[in-house]
Length: 444
Ligand code: PMP
Image (cartoon, rainbow, N blue to C red; front, side, top):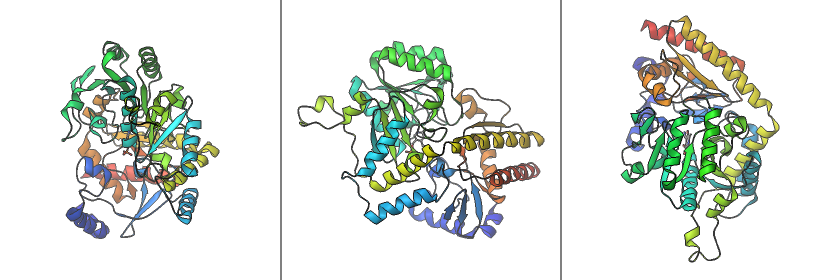
């Protein structure tokens, strides 16, 4: 690819080298995993497409890793941002936009009563766990293997590629160097989808602050209603708060998220991505008794025992809130968007599978309501670690470069996403690119 990208994307390669001198890595996923040899530097993003500094235009199937559900530069969001600029955007001082975003979130999630706004999914998870620790006066967090909950020590334990122990008796393992070892010890790891494993919650209840779960693990693009029902019941029985991490799925798979599809509701929901309309945003939304642990009191000295701090200088800033409220209002008024996304995702998944089979390539496509992933494997994985163990990352990495050559930008390693701006023509371009990419990969 060296020659190909030197000829077609010299500016991106120059910026890659320039970035090397000042920036840890130019893209989100590079910071976590491995450097992209050929990163794209975007000059302009519009609807479903991005354009680099050499004038190459790509259909984007990253959606910025999730936030851009309406596509790039949506007029409704741009208008809201312009309004914020016209009025002089503010933070850390009360303003109406913050109330409006909180109100629309609370209204969208059944059982939710109040919200805490922040700047990222990671922050929302940190805050939710802190509220639960304060509520239960316990440290230990139960989580599910493979579920990534942001980049904090706690959020990364046993996520993505890091797993150990038996499949049905996973052991906690740090997700990154630099993790506090006490956090690893304070984590109980269970297997999503394995109902018997939930009995561990009963035996360890006296130590647990909360259970956190991605109701639809984005890597598997599927949710298990039986499992979630049982999880909800055990948490209720034991009075252990249940946190749903809907940072990816909230307002992407449905208005409100997986909980509205499954009809199973947590005590706290963590949100991010879509709810900020493309600007940095996070939120914890849920039951008043938990959220109000974060409410300041008249006498911070005497009330210290009962309160947990959930502040943040930029949290609830007016620009993010206006963009977020505009996005959610638009989604609420246009439920047909979710039908279209669902149909488009199913259509695309089916086609990708057919193309893979036509080349005799072992391929699994996981897809659900705008979220999808491709794995080159013979086996259809049920559990997270089967999917990871069966994945051929080098082939996925190569595919990303071949797809780029044929006009599609897909992240080197991440769940893929569609936006409401993707047209049938875009979907067909993705299929054509995939077909050509597989053909060339097999030849090379
Ligand atoms: N939870 C999940 C399920 C996520 O996928 C992510 C980010 N990919 C996060 C939390 C963290 O969100 P952020 O990157 O905004 O901090």
